[in-house]
Amino acid sequence: MLTPNLDYVLLFVKDPTISAEFYSKILGLKPIEQSPTFALFALPNNLKLGLWSSKTAEPKVTAQPGAAEITFSNDNIDELYQHWLDLGIPIAQKPTDTDFGRTFVVLDPDGHRIRIHKMIKRS
Image (cartoon, rainbow, N blue to C red; front, side, top):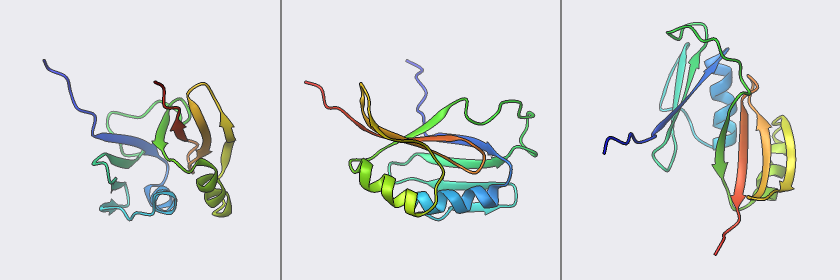
């Protein structure tokens, strides 16, 4: 079977330096690579998060931020929400209970949606 393995999420951003500062703040990590047009984070689960300047990406970027979400799981939804609120992170959705579990949504400097969730364990 030729099933590819998802190991990298790439967001197109206006200013990779500003976006890298934001993601450093919420992830508690420093980029492993950074230049004026690109920043790269390596997450503990081996997933990579790239931030590429929408002005220099090829082919030309035509999509707008907010059409998709990146999602992180966390067991301490309300505690993380309060921590990010204290950091001044823009909130799009306060913690709420949904069919799939507890969740909240924040926005990065470009308006990309970042969802934090704790899934309901089903039997």
